[in-house]
Length: 256
Image (cartoon, rainbow, N blue to C red):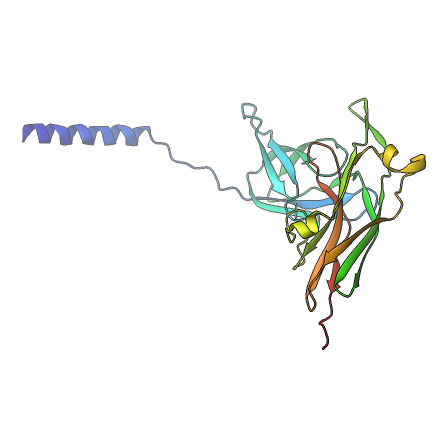
């Protein structure tokens, strides 16, 4: 009995000791809102992407002893972003991992209850004159690629446009369409145009626009509605796609 009594006393003292060491968390819950859009420098419009293709990276700089660990804010398909669960403070920000030339970090942005910050980026490529046509149930896709900039000075160093990597059609059964949302079957994926060449090698005469590119043989189903777009990528570290707009393709039902 004495042993049990002493054990109970010891346990009670331990609980009191732990309680005395505990601190009350009096920090406010994260409630700062951070929103904005990513703008295509060529068009002045939102950069069209696929859902969660890449992100805005932010680093909190409010605390001098804080670890330089970034958070990623995903971009929506319409080129906008919105996060309502961030801590108020001062942040550095960078549009990162997308199909565009490297851009400067925006420093010292103060996040409070509602902060808006837009980012302007310069895409590697533009997909122009994208046209899907359907004959019977076979779809053919045509487009052109344009590279408005062949090189750019970044951090006092001239950087050339990375090699073209591929051109790919994305076919979906809903309005979310792109590298994260498509019908993933070999019958479609094998019809991409694999390039793996420099722009100067691929485009005769050194122009900024390719001749018409054609992909055909996409077997669709009668009576179905599809959403289609084309993406073009370069061989950089990310291989993300610059996209055409999404086009709705309705395949008529067969008549007997």
